[in-house]
Length: 454
Image (tube, rainbow, N blue to C red):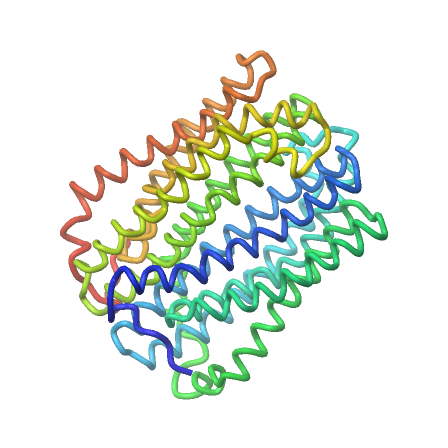
């Protein structure tokens, strides 16, 4: 099976065609959590909503780490493939399977062992504690399948194939939604039924991905002719993926900390925050898709020594993202109660969540710049700086402001919503400085043979 070279043809056309499957796949993958929350919100109570919202945040953090780490494989394979170095591609593919197979088991075991500390740290309201723990326990069993699917998707995207992950996740989403209807809607199993449904869909996504690899000959093609495990490839995958994963982890960690802070305000606040976070995650899917596509494209351009064209792709990705980001911001300003009401019928949750959503939604536009710049830097061999500015904005701006606003806002969630866009603005200023003063010379060329990590 041959991949696709993203360095050829119209830059704009290639970016759009390659990004669209990313976007659709992200939407479908987000439907996992949204389906759970929607069904539980309709057929259970606020306890179930709180459990799924809080547990979903924890699982999203683990998924974000998985996606970030496997992005290291996408970048490395993209660089080798762009440089037409087939043997190194084969070594990278095999190494990725070993590295992420072991990592998935470690993450699963750690989550199962730390269930009680996680619930305590999240300050889960007492009435929702048992349900949240049960939901997390069941979801943790699916971690190896989450990591496995993302590893396969990372390999395919590094080879220029963003359509197959879309098809695979579409089939898995159909399974998830249909089993949610069965377990939550018909059998009324609440949060536990939603968790079982999600795990079944994750199992299906990985099994389908492995069948696809075998059926199209990718396994046979890369089975021989290269070492089964190459330490250099493993180091490069982790060196590139770890900063991306940590960046994703920091974003989700800030969500967890903020959720824990606001959980202390009671069950209504906890449910409202969970619903709004789900809506914000949906609103950022287009930007995430363009950024993910840009990372793979930049990696191939770097391997081919075409970073000038990659910079043009960066500007296009930001502009396209802004179209969607501005639309989501306007929708939140005009229809906040209706949007929050999609996931809950509790008028108290709708009222609390509406103000939070209106303030938070400014972030939908700010992240268009930061996410795309992060992708360009990571794909271009500079994955450490996105981690650095994410660390600074998370712990110097977003979390302190969230804590301060939650204590001084008189119980209202609206002031807390401004913490996210202010933190992203801080990151944007750092990104502009770095790209102008530091990264310009290092992003003009380079090859996959000697990636830079500064």
